[in-house]
Structures are given as structure tokens and as C-alpha cells.
Amino acid sequence: MAVSQSISVNNVKPRIDTDGNIVDAHDGRLIQFNDTFYWYGTSYGNTNGFVTENHYVCYISKDLKVWKKEGRLLPNQPEGVYYRPHVVYNKKTKRYVLWYNWYPKLWNGQFGVATSKNPEGPFKIVNSNVKMFRSDVGLGDFGLFVDDDQTCYLSYNTIQNHQVSVEKLDKKYTASTMENGGIIAEHMEAGTQFKKDGKYYLMTDYTCCFCNYGSGARVYISDNPLNGYQLTGNINRYPGKASLVINDGVTRGTLHETIEKTDSIFNAVEVQFSGKKIVDNITISLFTGNRPENCGDVSNPRVHPEIETPKFKLFSWNFNTWEAINPEDITVIKSALQEQVSIDFNDINSDRIKIVPVAENYPFDKLYINEVALSSEEKIVSKEASFYITAKTIPQRPIIPAQQSYVTKLQTAEGEKYFWVGDLWGSASDNVKGHDYQYWSKPLEFNDDGTIIPMTWEDTWKL
Image 1 (cartoon, rainbow, N blue to C red):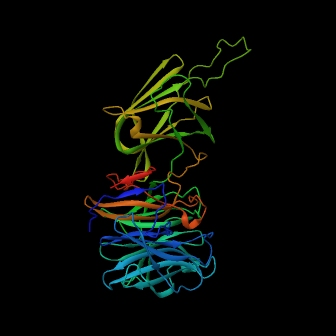
Image 2 (image 1 turned 90 degrees about the horizontal axis):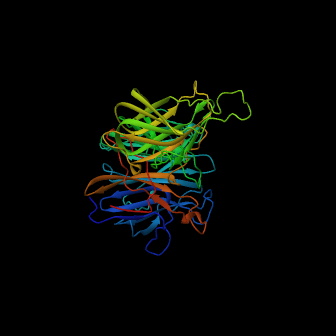
Image 3 (image 1 turned 180 degrees about the vertical axis):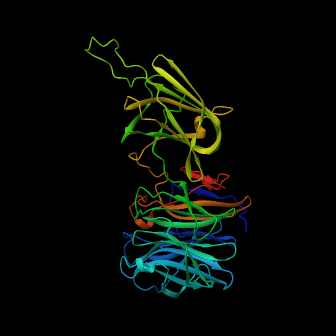
């Protein structure tokens, strides 16, 4: 059922329930059953999160704004530490199925499964120790996904090495068929799986453990729900150090970015567009102040070395790999304190471009870049592109300082929309874990090839 009213989301204020309390539901999922939204999560209260007081809760809403708290999902849960509740509906059995990750003793991870006639519960435990294909190395975070043919899959990571894989469940959604697609990634957690336009998405990233700085959101895409996943990027990571200088319109003077060598390789400039752009020219303006002066050697006929023009390698991102751009023509213009390198090439259509200065045979250890301009039929303006200095030694920081919880599908009058949900650990002003906020992204944007455009922080958004 499509949502008939306007939806308004605020990410800078805590969400309050109908009793006036801050919603305490974390690391679970937000899902729509018919015309009602169900927010399942772990309630932490005023704890450090590693305690047996953790329990599962459910809140319901008609508009994603007014939330009513229901009772506990597992009223008589066995003693242990509980995380990651996920609920799906089985059309065949007409039961709501709850899967959860719990630890009778940390870190002896296992999965439990429970069922109920009602989405808000209470749920009755069917099996508190479900055996999976990889149970021997411990079971950690996971996500549940029901395909169009009503087959249910569970994507999970192990405790040992945090290895991620996808596994097919039985027709009742209460046990594994032991059909596992193999290891997709390692050292990851907090996975989520969904489907859009015939493509299967698995999103996960490095372990976070209630981290304040947030995790990334790596996007793996496949034509098969179990395997064949290819890494296409990370929508919650800046690729390096953001630069506001090299696309500010100032092409001369000392307002520049310093590009240095790391292990005899120059750092790169990466450009990310707001959607795919057609580009056929890159013009790089360089300040020539990288040439050292000659002081005291009067026999040297020159005070400064010759101006040396660096060569550049260009790359465009294509689904899951960088592809070389072959120049058609290169023009160099030298003027007072500046040289300008203009590189023409055949049209490329991409959402990312990388510019790498060639260190070989270039005599200086630094480059000073005043400006990088990209164009095709018309110049690409600054609001359409973001510029970064990248290298292995430059950390990739999260865009949203949250740990991924789930990607929620929303039925709207404009069709299906997907928004990313993450826990903003440490965000509560009173430092109570149960009061930590959640970040809900505006609907994710997809390129024509199915890849997802990186997120941006939004205080509020409407749909």
C-alpha cells in the first residue's frame, strides 16, 4: 500500500513515542507491513550494551513520525546478550518470523528464531540455536531478505574474521537449507540485503562496535541472491581529504592544493559527481612555485630550474573498476607563475573520475594545483561535483557518523523508495545509549547501471 500523506524526517532531534519517551530501538530494522510501519530494535537503556538487560522492542507508526511503543517481542527470553532483531512475514504460513543474534555467553554467537501471528508480537521461540552452514566459527550480525518468489535469505557475518556470506532459508523461514553462497567479504558486520530492478544488493562495512565515528556502507551487487557479488563502492565514505580549492574558479596565485608523493607515487585527485556526467576535457591549472630557488651558487646560469610539465593518467569509474581514459590531445600553456594542461578525450559517462600525476621522470616531489576544470558541451559547475585528495595514507572518513542498521523499502505513490538507516552511537546529549539517535537518509539515488550515488548528510527531508 502506498503512503498517501507527506513524510517528514528529522535527523537532528530524538524521535519520541506517544508516552513522551525517546525511542529506544537500535540495530534492528524498520519495515512496512500494509499501511503500518514497524520499528524493531534492541533496547539498551542506560547500559554499555554488553549486558543481559538488552531486550527486543517494537514501535508502530502510520506516518514515520508518531510512534507507539508495543510490548517486548520475547517476553520470556533466556538469559543472554541480545542484538539485531529482524522480522519478516511468511505468506505461506501466515506467520511473522523473528530472527535474532544472541550470546548465552559473550562471544558465543548463535541465531534464534521465533514466530507470531501478529507483527508486534509477542513471539514464541521455535529454536534458540539455529544451525547455519558456518556455525562452527560463531554467528554475528545479520540481515533478512524475502525475494519476489517468497524465498527468504539470511546474510550474516561470522565471529571469527567477520566473514560475510548469504544463506538460503527453508520454506517456513525458521531454519537454514545449508545452501551457502560462499565468503563475500571479511572483517565486516551490520549487513543488509535488498533487491531493486532485478539486481541484488548486499551492503556492509568494517566492524564498528558502537563506534562514535560511524561505519561505511560498501555496496555489493549481483544478479544472484546467493553469490556473484561485486564491490561497486562505498556510499558512506569520503574517498579522501575534501578540497574546496581546486574547483573554486581561482586559477592563479597561491590558493592551491599540494599534491605530494607517497612511496614514490603521487597522491591523486578524485572527482565525484551528483549522478553520471558526460566529460570530454579536463584542464589542470598548476602553480609553478614547486621549483626550488638557487641561492649562493653564482655559477649557475639560472636562479630557478626549468618549468617541468607533469604527465597525468586519467581514469573513470565503471561499475566496479577504474578504467583508463586515453587522451586524444594535450595542450600546454605556460604563463607567469602558471602552466595549464588541457587534456581532450572521447566522451566518457561516469559518476567518478580520478586524476593521477605521473611521478616517473618528474624531478619535483610536490605539485601545486590551483584548479581542475571538467567540461563537455558546457563546464561542470562546482555544485555538481565534489573534489578530494586521495592516497592510501589519507583516511577515508564516514559521511554519516552512523553504523549501518538496515536499508528500508518504502512504498510511495511515486513507486518504491529505499532509505538507509544507521545508529548514531554516542549522539545522545545525556550519554545514555538507549537515547542515541538514528539517522534516516533521504531516498537513495541510483545510476543507470544500478550503482548507488554516495549519501549526503541531511538535517531534514520530506517525501
